[in-house]
Image 1 (cartoon, protein in one colour):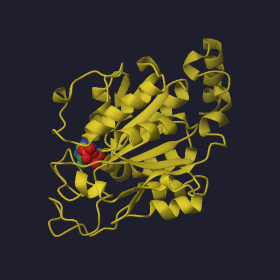
Image 2 (cartoon, protein in one colour):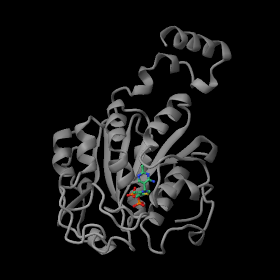
Image 3 (cartoon, protein in one colour):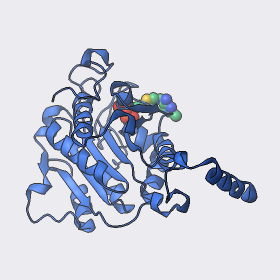
Image 4 (tube, helix red, strand yellow):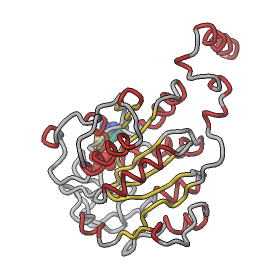
Length: 289
Ligand SMILES: Cc1ncc(C[n+]2csc(CCOP(=O)(O)OP(=O)(O)O)c2C)c(N)n1
């Protein structure tokens, strides 16, 4: 993919290992933003901590890296303060579903207009290979040499069960599909979730590029697949093992999101309101606190 106005460094200037799946995700995010006609000043890239969470360092836009697992509440705050910003969160499976699991639940439930791109390498990469909540049962890791003994969490299933209206899965090795999926996710009015299958070439020797490539299967190639059918989406999103469904599981565009229900935001973004309007809010806070 070609360089875009969002490019800020070369692959050598990152701390990712050569061949890391994070490069494909970075390229697709930049391509998606460029294709949507976004400008760097109108976008904020947010993350927690981890290898995936370094993505905001490598893209020219506003950026924020929070504590491990805490990207989502910060993203909600940013969107509510300035809903004119395009808010995109990139973080790892440990960050989002381990340390940040509780935040995931309530962010999905609120259905706020932000996009979460999950880098799922099924491992804690930065801290060198412990299992994450998304590691497969029985897979050996550095810390669990006899194999993981907990059942894996399926991110898309959880999101769908919580009422998310846009849920998809893609692969870091298919940058075109990933870019197109991210574009649809960003355009969706409400919370959108894209799980990206991402090889970690140093710490996960099981879920390799070839492992994913030979298993993925795009459900949207089936003309009868209905992206408005939540129960079907849940059934597909549970699929794993030898046949891993990718594509858009669910895409329901009607309905209002949390931001639409906040009356104070109806006129314009909070940061753009006049001091007088803000003063009214302040008096409300004072009265009730
Ligand atoms: C509250 C807290 N717990 C643990 C850590 C240590 N820590 C930093 S990154 C990380 C793992 C990151 O894994 P993941 O989110 O899956 O991202 P990856 O590095 O694989 O991209 C851990 C455990 C921390 N910084 N803060």
